[in-house]
Image 1 (cartoon, helix red, strand yellow):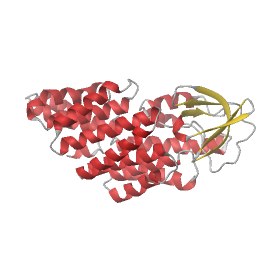
Image 2 (image 1 turned 45 degrees about the horizontal axis):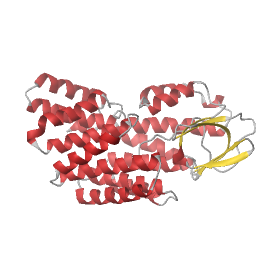
Image 3 (image 1 turned 180 degrees about the horizontal axis):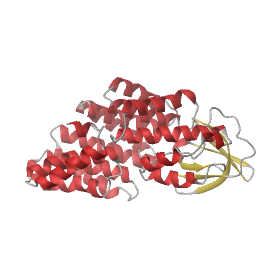
Image 4 (image 1 turned 180 degrees about the vertical axis):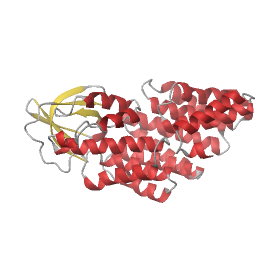
Length: 346
């Protein structure tokens, strides 16, 4: 699932009510609705808000973003940068915020989380060191074990562990999601484990995880369930490509792409990479593979992991088609933009 869950200047250790000094906060739901309300408490199980004298509990995955009333004005642009994949610019802006100027502990914790989050995303893309990013995020989780970000942070820790080749550690992080009370996180855990198995080249095991996650997602409803369904299908198509059924993989991916909303940039990026990998298993379809990976390079490059993989494939495909200059350009971009990516080291 790749709807980004962020809370601007919020996340706390317990259900202790937030200071009455706070004015109304702004909660943007995954549905697109914006709710002006006072956030009363936060925990890993949900967010309690009060509006017009009535309390409402929001589940973590129901929220796209929250802007707390005491957040500095720069947080408005920072959240936009993070949602759009501008992690480096967001991190630069976050580093200019003095935590000592923030009145609420929740705001200070959120500043720490956002820094760790951006570093983790940059690390997954190959821009910074994976182990250092994991250390920062793990420090946040240990310091704030009841944070609103508890489950997404564990998923991200698993992704970092998998990127470092530590698949056993990744499985332990993903298990936290599997053990959550939310079917949405259980589904996401299956997808994450499936991707980890793909990275290990354990394709039958990966396929089983994606099919299990798909079955869970199909029982749900709403935006989160639909995104999980498409993620599982993309993973399944990748497995089909690696188990001698690339034609079936292409058909499946075509169906996914036809249904994806334009705003699902990360899923588009993953889908076109999977499509390209399916076509690469069929040498007669080299042109179609090029087109698939070019979609990522031109349109969906904000997903650094997908972009790095696309650039590596483009380098090989340009060489195969006799376009040495284009191959050199793709290779140089890969190494300059994503120096720590495993794709840059192949």
